[in-house]
Length: 147
Image (tube, rainbow, N blue to C red; front, side, top):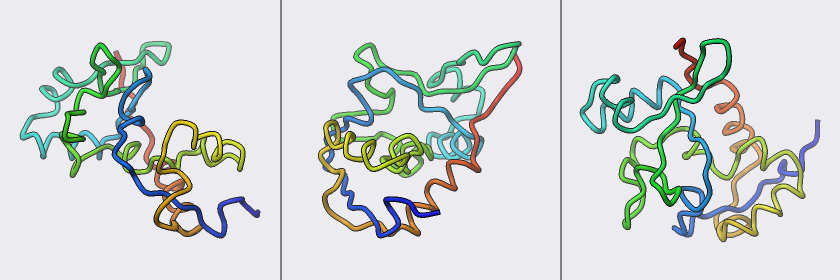
């Protein structure tokens, strides 16, 4: 199958933090995300979840784990300097803007330029790299826990 990104797309983070702030949303965590953040913050899993996460109901007694947001919708880890857990940031954060919803088609990619000044600028990311990032997201499903 041919994709609009097969020849690559440019992206370079400009540090605007739009993807970390401004609008409400979810940063769903997989087990690797939780483990990395716990190691970085030197916390056990229960303490990390209690301090930095919320349970998002998924129906019939199940929930996913998402990072909480500040009142202004900034990520709980966003500081004036940037991400407070950058070396251990979640997969969802590491793969932006190469998310399935944005990579669905050329229009979605171009639409993202309205919000992120780094989309379409900077380093050329190969089609192979983009496919790899999409596959990582597909394979690393968020934690699903029972209430």
